[in-house]
Image 1 (tube, rainbow, N blue to C red):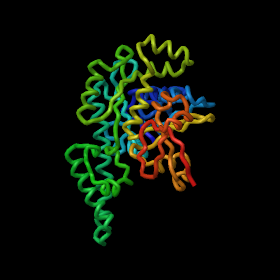
Image 2 (cartoon, rainbow, N blue to C red):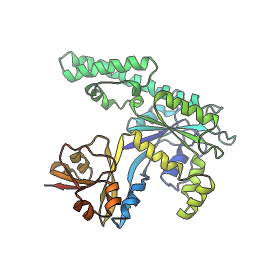
Image 3 (cartoon, rainbow, N blue to C red):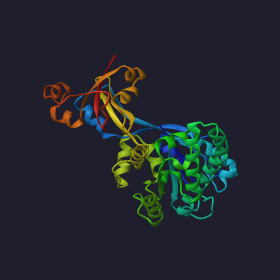
Image 4 (spheres, rainbow, N blue to C red):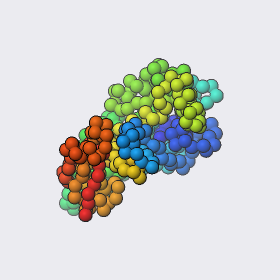
Length: 362
């Protein structure tokens, strides 16, 4: 699963990306359009359950879940019409499953805002409008072909025409497609278009070092917008997080505590991004490794096994499942089994967040 980091130029996207991925690469110059091709990195999703499991099943290594992040170039007004190479930039957003929009919530005379003034709501609306306009173009271009195919009696094409028309009507009301509910077959019929406003969104309020919890007036505007549309929001000081990411573990903890933080804000961001993607983790635990595996919420046991290896899904027989609470109560898998707490689940079992599993397959 991949999430794209977007926003206007000079809002702190690349600083945030480098901090998230612990990139030591040189920072880009303070100019719009300095990033043309998106950088891609992998970020671990912090999960304290890994360490708790390892207290009882001691492994050689811990392997957390991971997300792929794309640092996408700054979007400006007119991007949907190709302004500032906008069409090329927007095409990268079609390739991700979720959008992390960085919104500038700090004042700094040394960092020029592309619009000349720091206004979080204006920034949010600029990006939203450009994505809606781009989706309008995509759907308007796709409709004639879908209508021609539908005339031949093609059922899928008829479904696609209906879904396109509903989506165009919704966008015509200045509403992003993530607020439109389509029937699953309709949503599937237009899924290949990569419609950007249909993707879940998380606002990242890039705050000043004096407002680490995002309680200032600029960040509060972003929170209000997120609440209004049912989006997520996380306050992050990208500048501070980039500094923390450069330190070794001991110095990192000291700097966090001196800043009044329990953990890096980036840990909260990674977990929230994971959540808006509709993902959860289950675990496998043994002497070799304790590992978090990423699955969609609602995945069945065979589908869960399939993320380890496709053969596990094809030849799935059953899953042996227990919980972290069981492990902390009985101290070992052997005692969990002896107490009758090891559950045997079949193909219809829906995986739960935090399950610890063994899969048996043919």
